[in-house]
Length: 103
Image: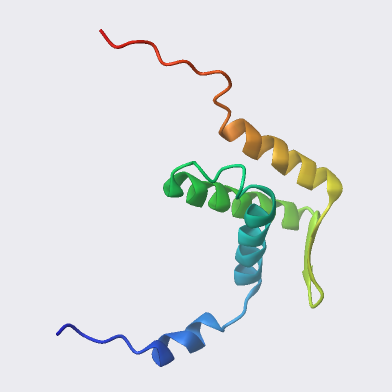
């Protein structure tokens, strides 16, 4: 039998809180709320990339004051949220793609 990983050794590490982990959680929750259904048919790797892109956007928006994280939760300004939606929707815009027969 292989080495057993003790979950009790890992869990305390996951409980460490930081501004980066809060921002990462906000990015995941934001993607789940606004984009998960829209991109449910897209490969999982692409969805991961979208979450990472949301995280990067929010990190920059936080520096500009458009994202706030406090004890009550997370918030993003209306303008930043709309900008983010436009950017994410442009990433996966297949439009009316038609496959041409392969000869």
